Length: 118
Image 1: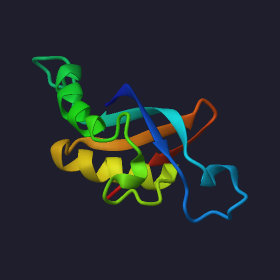
Image 2 (image 1 turned 90 degrees about the horizontal axis):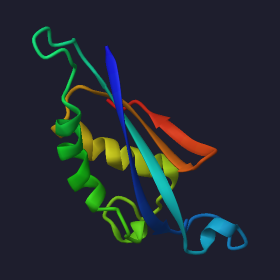
Image 3 (image 1 turned 90 degrees about the vertical axis):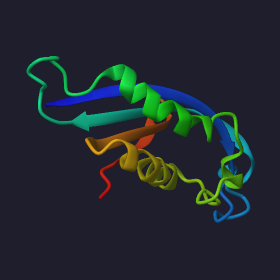
């Protein structure tokens, strides 16, 4: 079975590797929406894959590192594209949440990425 929980965080960034005339070269911000998907067996006694409260306890401290921050100043996010932010999030979440199956990171309501790490 697979469950999910959604989170939001607000961050600023700029993309240093795009051409100078590209609009994303300038500092701008997004309200990101992160969806984490957890896969596992249904606990017969508890009736769930994982307690949503436990999911929140794992994710919140990680998102505190990026919320209301300039992402370019965070180690590993010097070129903070949506795809690279998703990989950074995965690498920080997966060691604490072995049942993590995939994440979705929405940069805008209509744009984002899905990442299934290793």
